[in-house]
Every structure is written in structure tokens, then in C-alpha cells.
Length: 328
Image 1 (cartoon, rainbow, N blue to C red):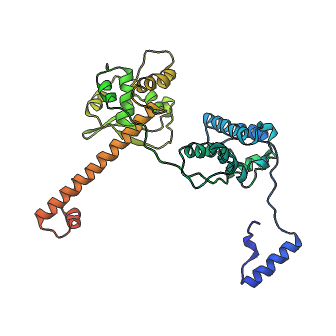
Image 2 (tube, one colour; image 1 turned 30 degrees about the vertical axis):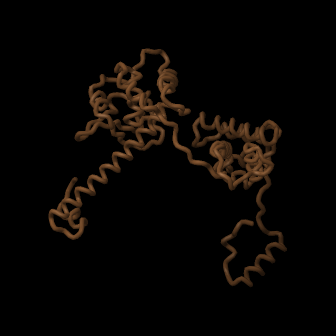
């Protein structure tokens, strides 16, 4: 029963008496019962304003349809909203694990995919969308998003062979070389690589950056909306970017640019990795390198501070940092 803060507060004996009075009078709010079918809810979901993009919303619907078929063996129009509850997700886990009852204690490789599928499918039922569903006369079960996650096994990311870098450096300095370089040495996503222009390249001090931000004048919005600078960590590639012609950094001689970016870099990378998204894996390698370079810089700085402290005869490196060092 929902808590009514207007009831006041008092000792336990008073609370028991008050609760008994309310229960006997029947004057309390009850949770509304789930009403409607999944087909009706999906139709409403597709037409309502939501934070998920069209592609993400479509994937969520596909995931939900797959989950329902596996657990209930029916299509969306034959499933009531009341059937999507905590028990439904437990049944889904059991089906995917090939067990009678879901195993929530054993870490399994398949559990990562199970959790991902449930998270995606259940995103349709999140609480902030429920008022909009209610306006269509559709009531989602209170526990539609109550999911017990399965423990997962954390495996290493798919490796990229050492030959990849040798092959890349031997390539002609063309569109494919630039696209791969932007992913590997600036950590750009595929969409960012496709839309990056010479105006995105910025020189600050001795470093070269690619500035990521919303650019409505160019008809492009970033994935997160956040502005940040991606430092280019390869000197040769950084120098190349500073001399690029006006316009797109990557200019393949094709009619369908989007198709080229979706296929060409991925096809080339498959010879060097088993990653499901080869180009995106280069972004992961970039993150690893930035973390390592940052750690090395921190270690070097600490060593420099210690040496300066000893040379100055300080008993604490804090004194050296606060009063003598401006940059190191």
C-alpha cells in the first residue's frame, strides 16, 4: 500500500491502530491492475515522444518480441500486459540457460547476453513512460521492470593482432587510412569519423586535438551532446591531420558515404580481429593507450616531485608542490 505522508506520525501503537482503521474502512489507494495487450502498448510506444531514437526503439521492440516468443510462445497481440512481470523475466533467464529454474548464483558466459536482452526489452516499460501509456488506457504491471540480473563472467576484449598496425602504416594515405587512424589514434566513433571536417582539428600547444561537439550548422549532432577534445596520440597521424584540405577529413570516392563507412573499414579490420564491431574496437585500444599514457605521466610527475623535494631538502613533497612547482 502506498505511503500517505498526510497521515501524520506517532508511536507504534498509534500507527497500528491507524492502519487497522484505514484497512477496515477500505479508504486506501490500490495499485491499478495491468490492462491492455503488448501489441497496443508497442503501438503507443512507437508514437509517443521518448528519449530513445527510432533505431533504439525498434531494437527494443524486436528484443521484447523475441523474449515473449521464447517464454510464452505467442505474439504481442495475444499477450496481456499483466503477463510481463518479475516472474516473466525469471522464466526468460531459465529458458536461455536451458534450465527449469533460473540459476542466479552461477556466473556464465551466456548471462551477459541474457542481461543485455532483458535490459533492452524492459526499457519499454520504464516508470517515466507509464503516465503516457495510462493516457492511452494501458496500465503496465508494477513489477514489469523488476529484474534479477544474472552474474556474468568478465572476459578479455577481442584482441587486435600486431600485424594490423604494420599493415595500416604501409597503406596509401587515402580515405581508409584516415578513417582507421581517426578510430585508433583519436578514438572517434563511426558517425564522428563520417562527419569530421578540417574545422574539427585544433592545435593547442604541442598537441593536436579533434574537437567533438554539436554542430547544427553542419547538420550533425554528437551522440552525447557533450563538448570535449580527443587528443591525437600518434605524432605522424597528428601531423597529417593538420595539413588536411578543407571539407571532410575522409572523402571516399563513392555515392553512398554512409554505406562505405558502415562496411569498408569493418571489412578491412576483420583480418586482424574477431571483434563484432572491429572499428569500434580501435576506439577501445585508443582508450587503453590514453589510460596508459596518463598513468605514465602521473608516475613521471611523482618521480619528478620527489627528486625536487629531495634537492630542496623538504620533509614533505606537499611543500614542494604547493610552493615551488608550477608545472611539471
